[in-house]
Length: 348
Figure (cartoon, rainbow, N blue to C red):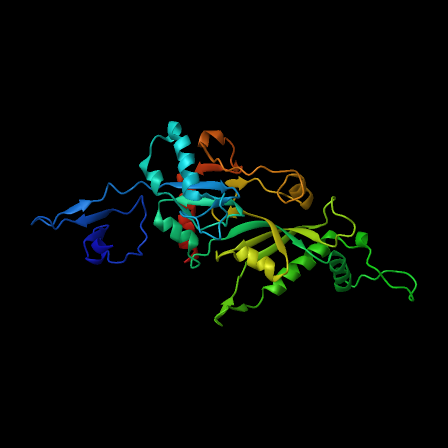
């Protein structure tokens, strides 16, 4: 930083005084003016730390922090720094003892109870690109939520769609669940989430300080709505499988969006990052029944939490798309990184 501000750093033989300047690792030449002798010669920078880019499936129970927050994180939680150290140590026979991996950090965060795609790098400009809302790269989250009032949801859907039950006019009309289509139910849940988040909310702490919260999202797509086969008939709750697309990664944004709609998150996974969609995929539920039977949500088959990560080499993925399972770490290809950097220019 001091070298840049003092005017001793040249980019393509032009003095650069901005620390925010983004450079191309292939096309830009960086040099430093040597002031230790009388020649003031420029020294090409050829010893910069080699940039590394990885994508991993962060499992639940791993905290995206280098230290544990007492009173917040569970005692049995695993720090991402410790988790990655074990991953790279176990893979030394594949990648060797690469000191560049010691400086790998997460790009953004996923909370302890969330899972899914997490990018890792030692390249600060890459992290800035993905985290800065100015660029607005879209991230897709798949969520299973639990709501209350299933019968009321059906009734509201019937009323919203002007569906009338035939019968004696003196009898109370009750909504027939079989006559409410899946699409109408999905639309009703979507409207519930959108209406609960269309205006900012305000909270007041114990000191009287007021804070305005707003968690905007691009799209909300409800994929499935219904009850679990194991639910008791008296249980009036329901589950919904939702895809939320966000550009701005505020803290606990997805959970707050669902909470504003009075929905409790049972499962949360980041399943896609713009620029990498179609190239990398993660294991995820496609329906409420699958989420239950495969252990993505409580109450179904037990699903093991994978805390021992594994570095997967590119040769292990022979197809066009790499499917990541919990704990997998894969190094991005140069074309993947270039594709994300190219989005920077398109979104300016």
